[in-house]
Image (cartoon, rainbow, N blue to C red):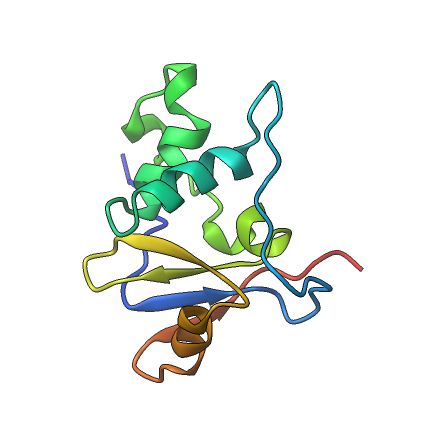
Length: 129
């Protein structure tokens, strides 16, 4: 069985070019946590501790009793499609070890990563028009 991955190395995912957002927001807390809120909580509390695969599996499939092998046997949407980037204005940096951290779009770190030519730059999926 082929296993797919969503992990990146030395990469920065930027907010969409057509985003109307001017500052990053925190996904709201609700009775039933949204995927964006779950991702936010994991990444804000554990920068550079988890890979994309670990975050996606933990926030979308683990609670359903699906094995990692089964979950990643099909291609999964990567963080380009994450509401954290598309709707809430967080950039995602992946280091050399494929571990990730999030940065608000108005932060100095976000701007530094955005200008860093040693990183691969990926635009988030565009907002719907």
